[in-house]
Length: 283
Length: 294
Image (spheres, rainbow over the protein chains, first blue to last red):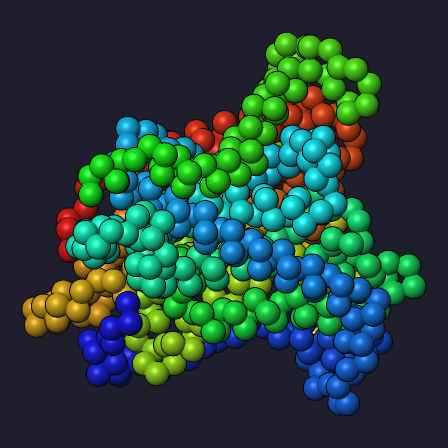
């Protein structure tokens, strides 16, 4: 994938017209988001003006200040970070152990459990919202970090386990055999050998878990009512009453939610690409 | 080595945590749903068993349920006929963009990486009737007669939802095909060029057939995504106006959390899962054909 593409780049009578078409297309795709960021820096009144994109002069950073206070961003941001961090940790840990057992260890029900995971990929999480709401209520889990972390881990587990399985299948067993001769147990193999070797898969799974937890809101909306545990998307819902017409501050909130995802994407483009293409292989 | 690798206790200890969470959150709720789908539970008072009553109502007397299924097919069809051909073409053309290739690839995926919460709310503003960006754009280019109440009229609302879902999902579709195109060995490009193939021939006769497996899985993923659609609809129209944009997920959510018809909503949940399993199985079977190795 990282390979250069000499067939394409060398001769290029075709190059730039295509480049322009694609650039235009990309610009159209990106335009609404640029508008959003632009808008978050304007005065609310300019929303109703005639022009489409206005250079913010001066930039209304006050919108962001309002967004932070009115949108309760500090508290919700902290919650989002806590939930994401624990979700990543647990997803990596659990899916790696599961994948190791499914690919390396020999037992009768291995393929049965693998199939269960694949079925789990198909089950829509929305169909579990209602029963889980009552189950969580029963166990006093509603309004807690657990009400978010547990489902995020559970629904991430099948996909992430398959990523680890795919990766482990490419790792030769010679190292583990040597390790066993040296007297290492299975947990020892996992920590001393698999942890360093599977680092690319760990990165992929971490980025995937971060994004799905950060961007999630329907489960949060269902399982969390208390101020204490609300995550970042809720800050937009704070804009009712006196702030409901402050569109610029709302745009600022949306920008604040979107930026971490984009930054993570720019930093980990390769991991994200590999997790996406995994989806196509494993379907 | 062998004995250690089939040690039951180790296997159990390592599988248990993951599958405990997985069963508790994914599988057990399905059976809870199944049980309550045979009741007339409203969440408060005692419930009675009503047998298959909820299912009969849904399948025989509930036009909204069928509309939700129709909408899922519409969205899936739009993915199949508009989004995916566009994504394949983009993936192929992007190879010819030289130095801009990497930047363009990155930009095209950005809408997909942002929370559906943000993008849906953003589109609500863009499509709003009076001051929405789209209507203002139409004014600006002298097409004021094209102004619409994009989310307020039944026929435009579903079209708008489909458009936004395609916009948001385009990055995923594109990236799948792009990695597919990049995965085709350079030798094949070289060989084709030596044989005098034009770029058009190369792409239609060699790249496209070799993309078959990627196309198949991507389309399966797209259709499943269409049936699982919730976020965009929930945030943009809540299924309205007049249930015209209802999808299975939003419909069940409405029945459950707005009008407390828990028994009925659970029946929708169960049918929802069955539909997803059926669609996956059907698409898997349909798309199964052999493609040459490379």
